[in-house]
Image 1: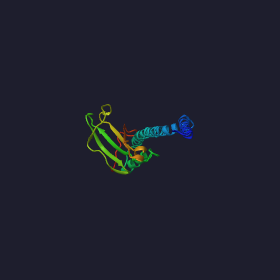
Image 2 (image 1 turned 120 degrees about the horizontal axis):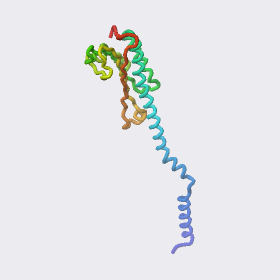
Image 3 (image 1 turned 90 degrees about the vertical axis):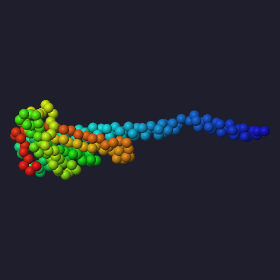
Length: 195
């Protein structure tokens, strides 16, 4: 047999439960808690993508600027080439997660236009200058004009996303690079006396 008080207590519990489920005061907080992680991920991915695009433009600018500065010289020495490449490296600021590799190669096309030979080449890797390519090299067919001199500048960077550094995730570093060919502007060739 059920007492009258127990019946009223059961009805009171049922009423409180139905009030709890019909209460909408906290729904905005719950929605915010569910949506906020998605919004944060979208924000960081967008920020990383825009920074990667800007860094890619800067890597391209390195090659263009270094080639422009070298081709304005009538002759160079190894110290000049290193200083020009270091100026190019500074172009990446404020990005500082990895260091670019810059290679400057002077190329002489043979009188018959069939081959392109390396005259001198220097490579800057992690701030250390070393010898670059030697022997025969490749030049696009449109630039392989008989008996001409070219300066080729290759700028490369391994872009490391912040997301990858922060959580060591599946985001892989991105290889960025650009190659520029320019002809000397103030002389026929640009010799390097101690390269």
